[in-house]
Image (cartoon, rainbow, N blue to C red; front, side):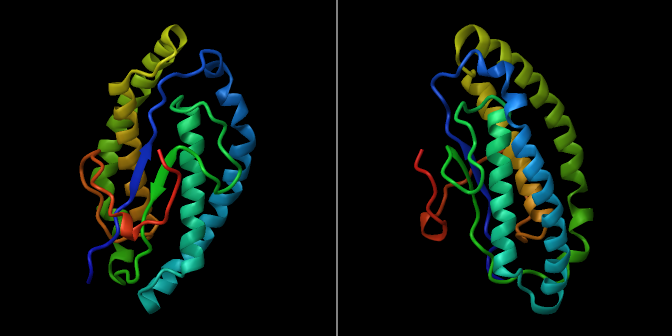
Length: 202
């Protein structure tokens, strides 16, 4: 089987951030959360259908795969906004935003892996629980840094992006969008532009 596509996730680093938006971003995303709750339910339904499609055909139906990726991109943009990484209000839908969330469509998927992916991600879940706690502390410190300086410290910013990248790779693997087993790191490999759908230029 050919090498499976890898998820590429990144957030463009902002040189400055609003000091007052940090007080209200949690409130402003409520409309997004309502829509994403509905999309999340639909996603689990389509994933159930895709499970059977992969079992019998070895393929994830393209329309359902595109819907799943759209939902993930929307969620990633909202999360980046809520996590204080960007000040631009996230769009409703799949419009441009300074967050990259890309993966090439896999032409074939393993019929056997659909039975064990939930088991194979357990080590990742344990590590991500620890990293998520650390990211929460970093986010708290960054809130104060933005309040006093208008900037998100770059090292902290990259750490939070890296934790998110790791988590999204695990999620896309678990939800059958790829067979590429998530690496145990936060690194972003070089992006092969020829295989990716064009997205916003950073």
